[in-house]
Each structure stands twice: as C-alpha cells, then as structure tokens.
Length: 151
Image (cartoon, rainbow, N blue to C red; front, side):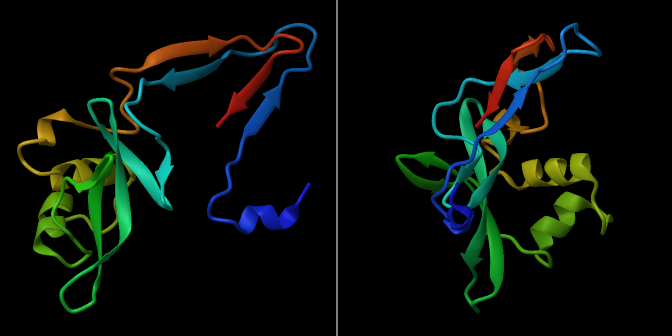
C-alpha cells in the first residue's frame, strides 16, 4: 500500500465489496450499466455529467474567459476534446436561464440545467448520468463469497 499514490492525478481506484454472510440477508445490489463509446467517469480531472448517446459528456471546470474569468464547458471526446456547449459561468445569462430562478439546485435540477447548456442541435440526445434509460440492469445477490468490483 502506497499512501501517496492517492495524490497522483493519473491514479485509478477500484472499490470492492465482498459478501460474507452465509445466507442472503436483505436485497440485492442493483447496478445500471451502459455501453460506452469511450472511457467514462472522468477525463483529465473533469467529471462525467451526462451522455450524448453512447458518448460520455464531461464538465470542464478549467475554461477561461476573455477576461480570464473561470468558466465551465461541456465536452465529449472524438479523439480530441469537442465542446458541446458554449462556455458558461455562475453569472452568465445562459446558466441563469438554464437554472431558472433557483439559486440552490438539488441533483435533478442541476443535471437538468446542465442538459439545457448543451448545444441546441444535440440537446435532445443528452441524458444525465442519473438517467437510467438505456442502461442494462444487473442485480447481484448477496451470497457468500461474491466479490463485486467498482472501477
């Protein structure tokens, strides 16, 4: 075990769960799995926030505006990074319109607002990472000796 490995930006982590009970107790672990056209979850330190079909959509938190203000952008990977939104910030008119009158957004409202930031011609294909449509359901029974890995 190398503790400083967690400080590296290139690290990969795997979580695991081992069922130790002899008889199943409680419900099954349900996972929603999607086919992906590329690596998903995170890209260069940017978190995945949605899907355009089978393409993962990432939130770039390091976009700089004309006056060096901190902005955000949504992108996919087509070999290279391809932005699917205009840059936006907390005070930009497009983000205020997307979030409506709400200052504090719960997860559903936040993902909905992000979806409204996607370019108009792609917007209908956008789904949130929280959306289970198009996912394959896998249920894992809590039986003795079952090992479940999360990448």
